Amino acid sequence: MPPKLQTRERIMEAAEAVFAEKGYHDAAMDEIVRRTSVSKGGLYFHFSSKERLFFAVMDHLGRRLVRRIEERIAQEDSAIDRLEVALTTALELLGRRRRLAKLLLVQGYSMGNAFEQKRTEIYSGFASLIEENLDAAVAEGSIRPVNTRIASYLWVGAVNEVLIRWLYTGSPDPVREALPELKRILLESQRVPIESVLGGEHP
Amino acid sequence: MPPKLQTRERIMEAAEAVFAEKGYHDAAMDEIVRRTSVSKGGLYFHFSSKERLFFAVMDHLGRRLVRRIEERIAQEDSAIDRLEVALTTALELLGRRRRLAKLLLVQGYSMGNAFEQKRTEIYSGFASLIEENLDAAVAEGSIRPVNTRIASYLWVGAVNEVLIRWLYTGSPDPVREALPELKRILLESQRVPIESVLGGEHP
DNA sequence: CCTACAATACCGACCAGTCGGTCGGTTGAC
DNA sequence: GTCAACCGACCGACTGGTCGGTATTGTAGG
Image 1 (spheres, protein in one colour):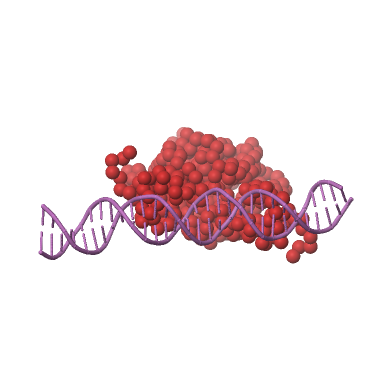
Image 2 (image 1 turned 90 degrees about the horizontal axis):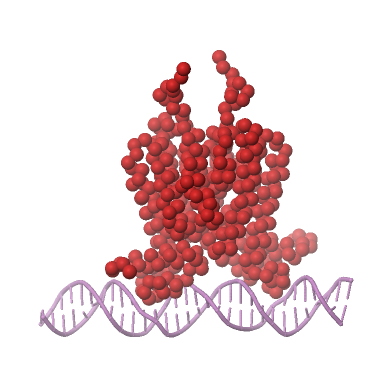
């Protein structure tokens, strides 16, 4: 076990595991307690309700994922490359960590209004990341002008669905199979033909 | 009240309403009973568990929606038109009936493995509808060849996300705002340029 | 350095409400 | 008579949250 993790973090780790395995409703606080060697009272000292704990976990994971993607794309200097790397990174990270994917993508809606709001919040994190870069790509003239807000939802939705499929059925492989197709449809097909920018080669 | 609906159907109607309002977990069987003027025993005579009842409702709604879309597209005779009409119809129908949309799109996953399977099943209904028509469109040469299976997931995912957004936040309007953009990105941009088929107009 | 005292962190037995499901019984059609 | 359809009081398992109490850490005074 880790040397001396803060209690709060230990709780969140255990909670992440249990929520991912069982889903929000079937996850029992007692189960989280059992896996933490923290008492129920101790848990409730840090998180005043099950809902709060769940949100804390989701926030944490969502933010971390967005941050990682932002780090990765910071190095690219054209918007269209940033878009491509963002797509790739998201699929790679979630494709590698099944538990994270499941938690972020499927456990979290359909449980009442507070949850819906949280879901929107987290997904918006991704969508606006995409939107910014779509805007930039349009500005730099590498893709056609589109309604970038809606286009960003479309990106998120497409990625989401592909990953959920894979989670439930094991295919398509997010990175090897889905990614190329996503790029082709979402990105390549929106490209402004290179010839019209650079002048293509012609006889 | 309706003249003399079969008990089984009355139950399913009430269940649909309650599930849509509360979500699976927060929907109480007693509440469904209350709205049905059928006793609990009577309900359990027809549906042996809450889960079974829920699945029956979801199946019913999912199948009905697919059927309606199929009816609408049957009249079109080119694949690309069928694709367009399918997209339009789905957004129109779900965009008009909020309750149905909510039930089909968000109440249903994240509650244990049996539910995941059901969700996959229902979404597959839509995906394969799309897939068939994408295949046909490729065959008739009106869109570029793509991995139509994955592309169909992408369609479903994109539509799903747009609708969920709208459900939770009220925008974008599925038909007026989202639809044109969906068409543009999913369909138009995949089109084989008309000139290469018919010979375009040129100076 | 030690004591006093408080604030923080943590413990776990217990409670109260909820809800899916059951079961012995009734009804009415054939 | 019998059997599908239906009734509704009741059960028991489960679980989020509480609460009185304990351990640990911080700190001010002597």
